[in-house]
Length: 467
Image (cartoon, rainbow, N blue to C red; front, side, top):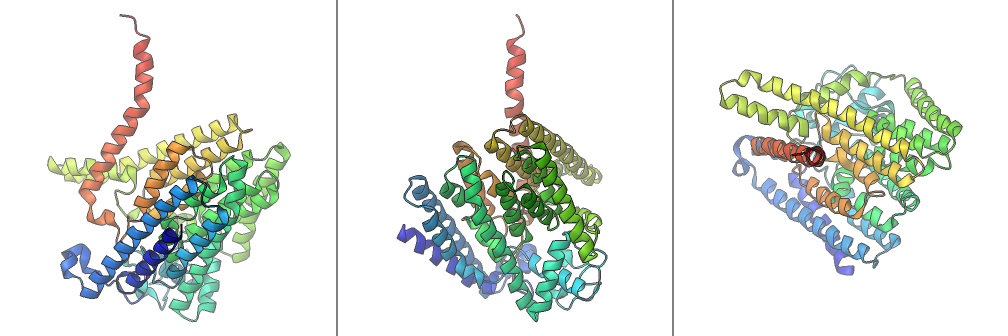
């Protein structure tokens, strides 16, 4: 255990060291030429930092995997796991942002609001944010798609930070607070589901994905994950408190609303269910009114779908069809193929959410089943939406960690380790470098999943046919 603990710390330290020449630096992208001209066109310090980051991340994933074996063997309890996770986090608290430049977007959105402007109407560039050069070019003109709590927290950070670095540091502390909240709530929720808390914490909180994208990346999703887990844990005994937490989660990112019906089903008495739902709605409305921001984020959310990446399963399927169309000289239909695939994905998402909510209602006396369905709904939302980034999976993985059965947990662990590598330290997505193979991987995956789902039904139908 000691070797694993300190090995993970050394890997995290190497990752943090590499971030200062290959991370998402505020002065600009040190690896901007990578996508256009390849690694050889990037500066030597960037290449060294990138190598350090990749080796450090691989070492952290390996240490985490070994830690999981000791947890499953019962050799590591919750306290030792918490100490290990905290130790691995320490170097990343002082690292440059990793995997994304979103924290600079948050900072500018907060600056706009603190300056009296509306971040739902103005992007960082148009609003005159002094830190706009640090924002990823694709988001410099984009309005904020986040709820009023996210904007208010960013504004507080911008007001107290004294500059971009101070603001980014305070936003990282907000993300850390979300991780701590998740770590505190997860054991209680795991016990209510009959799952060993240490096993759930290893898969849901103490992961390389959390280290890179929640801590180092300072994403709002860390706070959402903490609030949702805390709400699910509080729901059976404190429905009003759970409703408050869920209302705040939705006021950070509206996608958290998917967890609401499942939290309601964790409450036994019908009257108390209404209390939870009503409190959540009241909390969201109160925050929206208090900040004066209202629901302006609705229009901005649609703007996030402008990115076309195969990391979204429907988008990848549409891209693969588009490549085939181009091969036959019908490239004009490529964009239509992506749009049709995305609309189909949203249709499947609606069906999946309805089926999961119905299944949870039928087995509402079984908390583990309800929580499992909640995690599956959050996962479906992430996978079937038009755009997917690895930090979108944080909440779903944390909820699934407390309810999934052993075979599923193994696949979740593999996915968690793989997702940590989905973006390079400077924020360039691996998907941008692997468009064609990634798109056809999605198509193959969709075919396999469809076949696995249809095969039992076809077998039942064929078995009933008399020859």
